[in-house]
Image 1 (cartoon, rainbow, N blue to C red):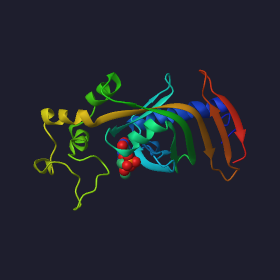
Image 2: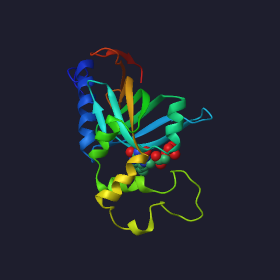
Image 3: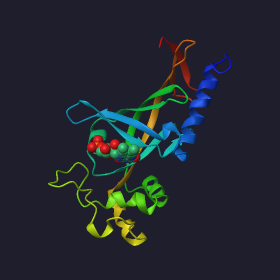
Image 4: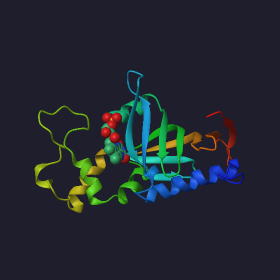
Length: 201
Ligand SMILES: Cc1cc2nc3c(=O)[nH]c(=O)nc-3n(C[C@H](O)[C@H](O)[C@H](O)COP(=O)(O)O)c2cc1C
């Protein structure tokens, strides 16, 4: 990476551009991220989620979830969370500190729901909440939907279980691995332009 590419403003621009691309591009490695929060016993817990939105003006990252899932109760108790992304192609890791909030049955969730496919909606039709105990291996989706999409009317029943988690970005830590020497920088994103600080990797 040359000096121009290591200019902090340019690094930040590329981070934003990669996150934006990753929302639409399923093959971009940042399309899937690891979301970490504290569980109800204050122990860290992580899971993979699909990056659904990056809003540069609002400084938010979003993903969709089942409103009955355990993480929703956890986020409501403690909204300080992290996103982690890694791209082996870019040789870059993003560790993003966020404050999360649950958007349920409001304009944000309604807009996002309106854009979901019938196949994505099917998950929200499971009769029992995610994480429920069951005696057999099952996805909990009603039997008549096995191997097929719900029709539009039936898919609408899933909205009651749908939510969007919006995550206000506090800071973004970028780590770049290189044989020329690894590089690490943290961007605190309070104002329009983030403040930065280089770190030893
Ligand atoms: C590739 C992949 C993508 C996933 N995307 C999501 C997602 O966008 N939202 C979500 O809530 N769970 C998603 N999951 C499932 C979560 O990783 C997790 O198992 C589930 O949300 C239950 O987590 P919880 O018990 O901590 O609430 C995904 C899993 C995989 C493997």
